Length: 318
Image (cartoon, rainbow, N blue to C red):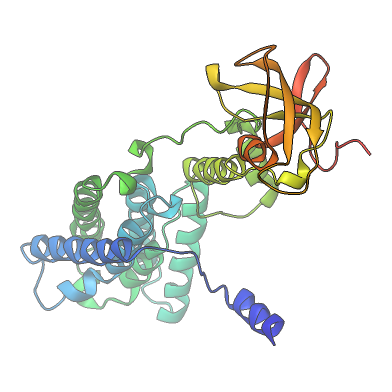
């Protein structure tokens, strides 16, 4: 039953990532602020009767800018470029295919807008609504001609962009655009950093648009490896003549080797004698309860090719 439930959830793409109530509240408040600003500005340039319809696509933009401010679909070029190219295409199709079926014209406008956004690297889903509304918006919209591109589309896009930058800047973890957000901390010593070229290659192999930016990918990697590095060994994993590292950096880093042990079976009397082979306390010898030593040791290492390397399940000697 649980497997069936998991399969259904996977098929539907239900996301169960933990998001705090504060984050959800801020997304809600930001969406309100963005649309409120747009409506205040738009009513000065357009007939009040058509304003709600004209700004409809901006409601979708608000979801992206305030709920997922770090996603590639939410960035300034995606927002501005996506609405701009979609508006131009929508108006052009409405003029050139005025005598055609509106069903064909509207469909063509959206299809061409998607293709153009792909090639111009400014995919922004609300752009599809901007394109289609230029065709089916009626005389009040079609009468604007290419003025539709500037007011209301680009005007609205600029307004919501300014609101998004100002609102999200108040919260360090939501800084928008993603470029100004705090850079991820470097990962621990036993994990290699991922280069820009490596990420570009990996994403190209997927061959599909991935709605996450490079900095967030690096942050996820950093958080995951930091958690892995924070783990310690179990007392039963501490073996005679093996080498262990505390995984620290700088002057605190140390490599110890177990040179003797007492296997009394009780945590308070089961001790290990170790010698510091490298790093802090080099050449010193001491002893600790096995459990205390295990708390110090993050992972086992071996000296190979002139350097200390972490022992993994694949490299651990038999």
